[in-house]
Amino acid sequence: MPTRWTRQERFAWALVALLFAGSVVNYLDRAVLGVVMPQIRRDLGLTNQQYGWAVDAFLVAYMVSYILGGRMADRLGCRRSVILTTVFWSLAGIAHTFVRGLGTLSLVRALLGLGEAGFYPAAMRGAAGWFPPKDRAKAVGMFLSALSVGTLLTPPLVAWVTLRWGWRASFLVTGCLGFLLLPPWLLLHRRIRRVYGAPDPEPAAADPAGREADPVPLRRVLAARKYWFLLGARAFSDGAWFFYLFWMPGYFQEVRGLSLARVGSLLWIPYLAAGIGAILGAWASSALIHRGFGLDRGRKAVLLPSALLCALGGTACFVPGYPLALAILSLALFGHQSWASNIHTAISEVTPPAHVAVLYGITGACGTLMGALGQLVIGPVVDSTGYDPVFVGAGLMYVTAAGLLLAAGRIEPIR
Image 1 (cartoon, rainbow, N blue to C red):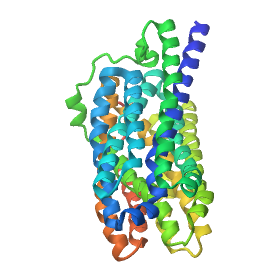
Image 2: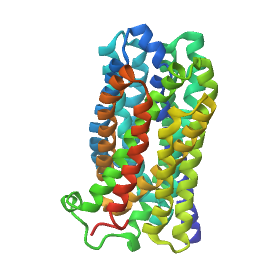
Image 3: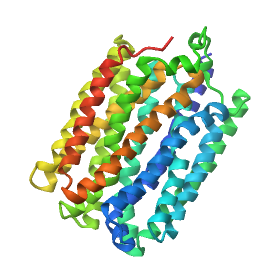
């Protein structure tokens, strides 16, 4: 028995390592646009509002694909879903090389969103299947920290490529990276098949101790108040995150006066802070649960302070000098990913195992919808009055998210 469990743990963490790598490339591909936003706007003759429309094309497609991808992951499993989504988004990323105006930019952004969104429900299904609840946040924190690693690597890599060969080359280079993920992913699952007799087993979910005696129908979860309040908590925080992801590099260039090269050398700092927050937040809540706090107290003991840190980001636009603004945003992004590791895990803990991917996908879709609606406001506001109201609004969104978390009640399975 000890040998079996040691082998299972090795497979589980190898799975997380590859999901981490996939998440790095996933976020790197989507974050390219934010780094080269001033150059694309200039070359294609776009206003901030039109740039917001292109971002919205990504977010609307992302929203739809989050739900469809969740359904696909529940039916096809983690392995096949990850392969399909990786190939699709990589081809869409390469297609950015050929854009000629707002229409084609919006089209390829939509295709990128369709491919990228399905990856995360598949990853969450893998984590929920291979890890019991007390350790699940560690796995989720690992592949969510990859979001920060991807956005951390994007400014220096994209700035280096763009300054030498132009912004089109940056999409070509980053789009090709996804294909490097496929050989190790296929090799891992070939080894899993040899050991378990199936390419997509879920040892933690298949454990009789964790099996549902009376599976909860999907419609009952969709009628539960707890689920919708947690969905709202994630949606408001996701809306603020998409602002930071797509507008922060442009803000430092257009308002704080940094060059593209300077952005490339500095903007990795807040994303590094975000990655550290994802890991520390996940491990802190897991440690509290191991010490007897329970799911509810253990998660909220990390979630609520993280939300307060995030709210500080609303003050970044008012401080003098870019170093202090960068420091405040680094704290805010640290808080966001600490929050995200735990709110994403909490959603998987209240939902039935049979529906975890599609229900997680619905929360992601609503978060993306919040981000998409925000883009319709952000572009005109930035064009007319500047960034200040948007930063304040982003800070208040985290306060709202914390209130919704408390209104959801205890973090425990819906029965």
